[in-house]
Length: 202
Image 1 (cartoon, one colour):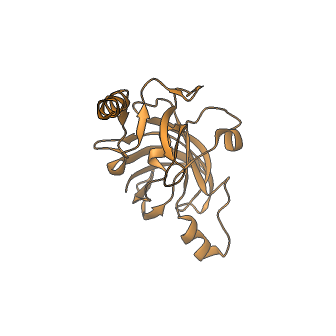
Image 2 (tube, one colour; image 1 turned 60 degrees about the vertical axis):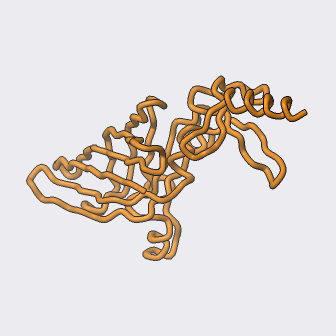
Image 3 (tube, one colour; image 1 turned 45 degrees about the vertical axis):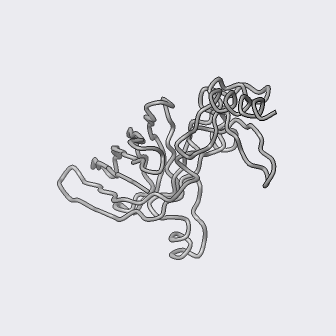
């Protein structure tokens, strides 16, 4: 009996691996009869104290449900004027692609920008608008975590709605808890070009 138990544990643990967040992930993406997409992993999710369930979960979930992002935003104009702002406690969301983007692929993160939801509410007595107060990241590679932005957003420097266009990457140096979001982009406003950069960490 003890041998069978040990053999079962051995097979179980060598048939799967642990993610950076200590969740068990099955390597072959066959998740209880469901095949996970290339943007998902089969993850052991606890339902209660005694049970668990295997579910397809987006890879990007690791970068949205485990802490807030903070850093510094820098915007410079083509005539040399520089604007900086501290970005605090931004709660990234692994956006439901069906709801937000008319897609079925889990490759999007939306980030409140440039204020967190709580800070926006404190300043405006209303919650942010999902169209102009969230920056949309569309990822192009689930391994390198490269993304691009082509999104209408309220810019704090020019105090107007503009379209940010740029590229970025989540640098995952020592697991998702230590990841860094880097973004470099630009926008045009009233005939002038502006360059936007930020680095965020948790």
